[in-house]
Length: 453
Image (cartoon, rainbow, N blue to C red; front, side, top):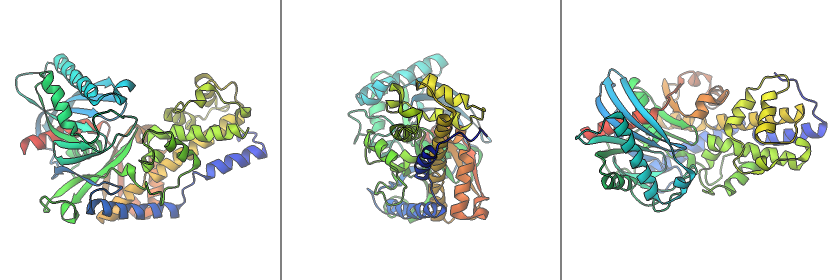
C-alpha cells in the first residue's frame, strides 16, 4: 500500500463525506435485488415497462455441433466490428474480423450516413478477405441499443444510448435501413438476424457451454439477457411452449428513483447527458460513466479547496475528460509516491502540481466509485436468479466487456456483493466467466439459427 498521506483534518473529513456517498450497504443491495424481481415481472407482463424484457426471438439452446460460414456485424460503442465466422462443430470456430472506428460525426448525423458507412466497411472487408462470392451471405447484426423486436430479423429502435443520437432512426426498423444501404451498394449480404449484444454473448458462450444461464455486457454500456420459459410471459402471444432468450434492457432499471443510491455527482452527470432521466442503472455501473462521476466528485473537492489547493485545469473542467481507464491505472498504482497517478493528473490532465495527499485523495475517490459500480452490478444477476428459481443451483454467467475484464477487483467485488445478497453458499455455485468478443460469434450463431428456420 502507498503511505497514508498527510491529510489535514479538514481534508480527511471532506473526503469521508464524499466517499460515504458511494457506500452501498448489504441491506440496500438486497432491496435493489428485490425491486429488480418486481421490475422484471412487470416487463414480462406488459409492454412499456421500465425494464423492457424484450423477447429476442432466439429460442432453443446451442448444442455446439452447429456448422457453417456466417457474417457478423457488431455496432455498439466506439468501433464497428465486421466478422466472418466459421462454425466447425464440437464447440469450435474460427473468426476473422476487422475493426472500423465510428466517428463522433457519424454517431450524431443522419442514420443513412451511418448505414452507408457500415455497408462500405462490409464491402471492403469482403474484398480484402475474398469472401464475396455469388451466393448471398447470411449476416447476424449485433445492434447494441434498445429495440423492440417483432421477428428475429426485425426491430424498431426505441431510443439511442451510449453517445449515439442519429436522426431518422428512432421508431424505424434498423434492419430495413441497413439492408437498404446494402442493396444500393450491390452488396450480396442478407441480414438474417438482429441481435442484442447480451443475447449474442449468451449464445456465443453457450456454443461451448450449453448450460450457460446469463449473458451480460459490462463495458462502455451495461445490459443482460437470460433464458425464460415463455409460458410465464403474459405479453408474449406466440408459442408459449418454448424457452427463449430475453433481452432485459436492464440499464433502464429504476428510472423512478426508488432504490438506486444516486449521489449529487450522478445527478450532475445525468443532467448533462444526452439521455436525461434515462438509463440510471447503466449510468452508475457502466464504463462510459464512471470517470465522469469521479471527475464531478474531484471538482467538488477542488471547489472546497480540499484538493489541488483549490486549482483545477482546463482539461479537468471539461466534461468526460477523466476517462474510466485512468481510474484503473490509479487503482493499481502501488508506487510509494503514487507517481502513476501523478502522471495522469499533471501530464495528461495538466493540473499544475499535486501533493502526495492530493494523489491519495484521488485514489480514494476512484476506489469508492469503482467499488460502488461492482457492487451494484451484482444486483441484476441476483434478481434473475431469484426470478428463475436458480438460487442455490449451478449458474454460469458469461460476461463480455472491458470493465469486467480490466477494471481492478471488479469481479471480486461483484462476487462479494452477490454473497451478501444471496448468501455465501448460493454465491459459491455462481461462476462468472469472461466471454471475450462474444457478440460477434453469437450473432453468427443466431444468423445460422435464423437461416435454418
